[in-house]
Length: 311
Length: 311
Image (cartoon, rainbow over all chains, first blue to last red; front, side, top):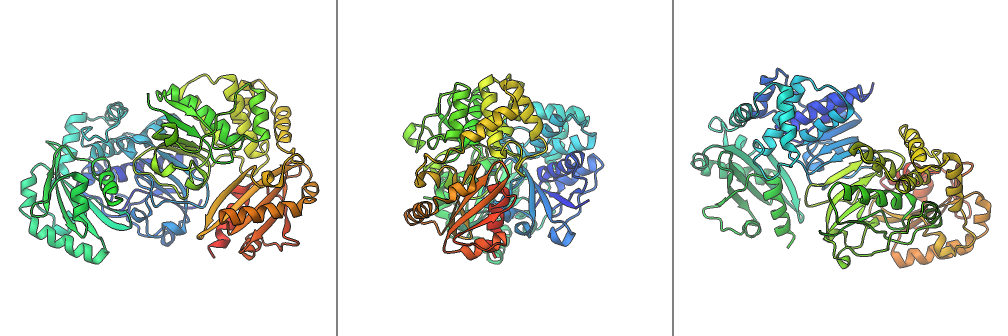
């Protein structure tokens, strides 16, 4: 029984954890008995709330597949190598379940790869479970539901797919929760920013993108009070500058997202702020600007940055 | 109704044509009314046999999506950009159905992507049809069956997946043919090499791979008589050298595959024949060598070359 590690992206969010937990389970049902869910980092407070609610222990944290004795891996909720396990290029990628663009990804051999432009990787894993005719355990349904709620901000983000509403309903029924009540409680669990250091804030949900050869870090925090987060602007900027210097990011885009009113404040530092301003057609004032209606990094930030950097 | 071009790879083989024809049909059933099958080159004689047998007209040939007024495309049986339409980087890739490794592929946005390590892209399209609960028209089943037979050499290639046997059976029933009889007739239709010019021979089924920065062309012909093909070695080598010079290929690997006995003769020219010899642990004699049991470019040639070039 060879070991197969199943994991979501670095800086795991609730969809990364939920989709990998459930897909590891489905993989075992499909005959890959060695499939084991692991995580590429500590779970955040939102995810911890979901795990606690459904009585699931957080996946153990790994940094290298080879060090775990695993030659094969399965990725969920990501495909770009720089968001994956450190030795991703040295192992066989057996499968990918994801809902992001494809980039910086290649394999030597054919593989299972299921990508759909839907609200969460968890939505896809749910459909795979259903297609196989398996009963979905309550806790698994709960974690998949949490992944979908988290990624779509309770089905309000423009990344929500028309099929996601029904998926959410079905998963809520299987998990035995009221969608709205549980969903708001889950999202609010992730907005407790006051206890976080600035270094933690900029790393809660952060991904690196290669845009026209530049490493651009795009981080996001959820809140119910943007001005409260901005009172900490100077210490956040200091943390960002340190992170840029240490990791070689050309630019850092920090999204402060109001999950109640569905807007974001963008705080941006770096060598290419002109590209960032052009991407969103706004002017940064004291390094930040308001982006009305924007809640989705994937749909409302990264494509716009990609286009602007490539000009 | 915006136009969406659906196509397989350049130098289309029967799986490229069959999978794209059927997936365009399925895409229209899924609501993409503008989905139209096209081809990136002339169909080969094997494919022509299948199209004729099932009364289907060959897809029209296009070289640019933009020139056709299409902003969106769907790829079947390939994903690597150098095997795709000329302006692939300028259009939106809505979907991919494929059974190859992933390389030289990226998108700006999330998409539908279904890859499985099975014998043919046609196998995957068949399962998608089934999952949607649609009745598969006889001609569509026939072309999908032909794609599977062609890519697996009638289920004899090591690329044949355990699920492909049942797929072939079901498709043969839907198409109203006897699997063995039709399969052999189809494969033999593709072995009529005598009427081909050497330039045509090396282009019947050829793909370019980027191996450690080198453009390597790997072409394959099917035959029932390897020595007969080798009587034309000098004119084939001349055609290969011209093609290499014109297209900047570092190396050219020409597989002459015996579909009855499941072996191949490898004819190789170029700057890195040492890498090619190391890949297969053989010595080229007069530029060629026998590779016992090898019939699959994807499984028995390209991974070995990739590893050898990367050393």
